[in-house]
Image 1 (cartoon, rainbow, N blue to C red):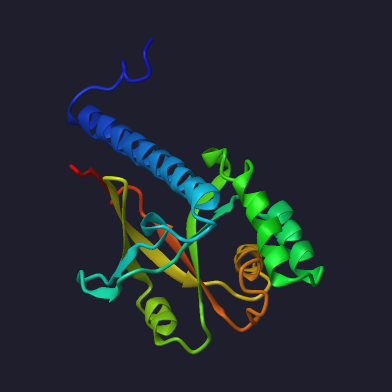
Image 2: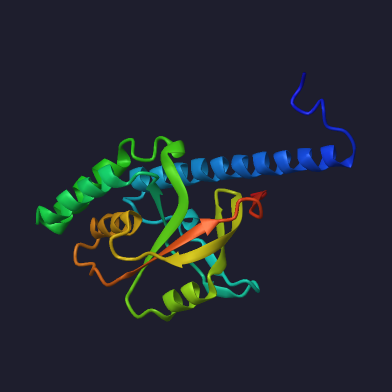
Length: 207
C-alpha cells in the first residue's frame, strides 16, 4: 500500500501540497548553498579572497527599502570547531600580517568550500561596534537579503538575531575575519540571518 493510499477527499490534496512545498524549500536551500560555495571558492582561488557581489547581498527592510547596498556575509560550517581552532591558531601565532594572509588563503583555497552539505544555511555578518545598522537590524528582527551574481539571483527573507559572546558561531565569525584583520576587537557585533526557505525566491537572469 502506498503512503497516501488510505487518504481520501480534499485533505489529500492539502497534505500533498505541504510535502511539495517542503521539498521545494529544501531543494532551494541546497542549490543556494552549492552556489555560495562555488562563488566563494572562485573568490579564494582567483581573486585573493576579495568578496564578490554574491557574497555581499543588498539588505532590505520588510517594506523593501534598502538598508545597505552591500553587506558582506559569512558562510560557516555547521560544526565550526575545527576551522575556528585553525583560524585562532594562525592569528595567535603573531606572524607578519602578509604571512597570515597567505596561510589563510591557502587553507580557504583548498577544499574548505568543497562540500556544500557541511555548511550551515545561517549567514553571519560582522559589524563594527556602535554601527546603527546593527541595532536597527536586531530591533526589527527580520529583513531580506538579495543576492546577485553570475546571472543567478536569490531573495531570502530572514529572521535576524545578534549572537552573544561565547556562541560558537560568533567565535567562528570573529576568528575568520581576524585572518584578514588581526586587530578586529571582541566588541564587534555579529548578526545572524536565518532564511525562511519556504518564502525564498530564486531567479535565473539573462545576460
